[in-house]
Length: 351
Image (cartoon, rainbow, N blue to C red; front, side):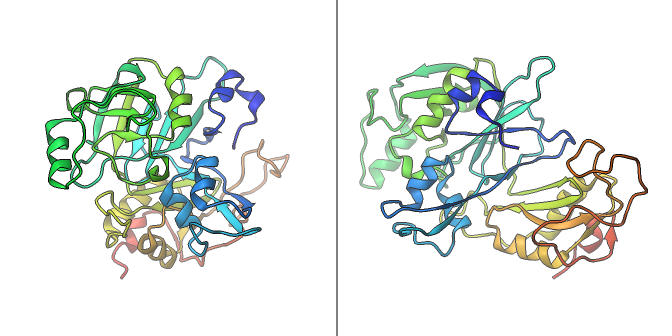
């Protein structure tokens, strides 16, 4: 559920460009909702992406039939706002490289409902991958000076694009105006802004993680030195929420043009199994194959939980305890279900 501004006070005022959500009380990892808007004559999809804090590939995949540069007056545009949070501990900062997203979990005060703030991000490209691992923020650097490494200088020289050995602070600095230094790669990996916001949401950096200028400006003052940072490579995510099973699949970060990789159905089945736990869910394996093959990064419904009864405090739930029914919450697009499965791996070998 996206929060109203008054619910988190000054924090939301600071992060007005971000997507801010309460964490699901049932422990699931699916957050957010999509929006439908209409473009105006002067819009591009990248303008809308920045306005709503979504990335390059996210806006393109959500609107495959809309012209990137000239959507036109009155065109229906989907703003993707539904995400499955990676499976690691929801603490500090989490960056999922294939998802091109950063998630920040502010420490909740007593009796406060935990929230998550998420921003589109640009990790490293092929020759300069962002390292996976657990680190923390060691320093906050306003108006950073960029000193490229020898490896970066050499790569630019060989590409016929030489760059200065020292890049002074200012609006033309590729690091932008704010930077959070991590301990990765001997302090060479930062979370920072950019002077090229059009590329946010693509893998384009020298290993650092870039955010929109306004997003890093919002994140910078609320993140403390010592905040843990977990960088993961999870192209496949699954979540069971409210009796519905969702699957989200992304191309690998090694794909410069965002081309999907051949699906690994054994791995996908293992991830679905983990999301299911002990729950019995009827899974549409044709839909699983479709989602895995498309790999467009959009969470999609692939199964329904048997014997699911909404919690007593859920909207529309019965006021008194009733026997569980072989039904689940209705959605606009129900999958064609197979027989209920407890273990997703029972259908792993489907071709």
